[in-house]
Length: 74
Image 1 (cartoon, helix red, strand yellow):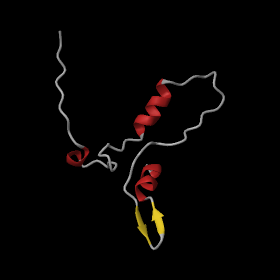
Image 2: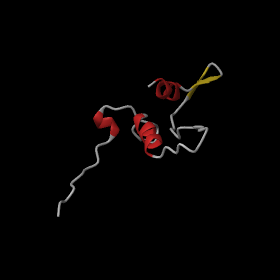
Image 3: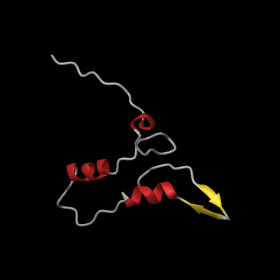
Image 4: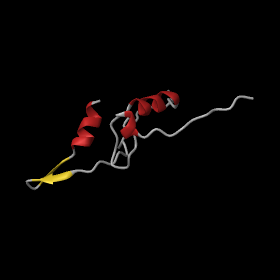
């Protein structure tokens, strides 16, 4: 029997981008899930959100969601 030994490494320590909830930003995982669950019988697929939470700031009466913009550009 093999034993898997793991430990938690926070995104901050990995120097990886992360959300306000300290979840690592890794868009490739969403693509991988789509590939694993692909159903050729479906004609259309719609991705409606990424569920990433970022702390946006209001500047001059406007909110610029730079975290979301950065995520979409990855």
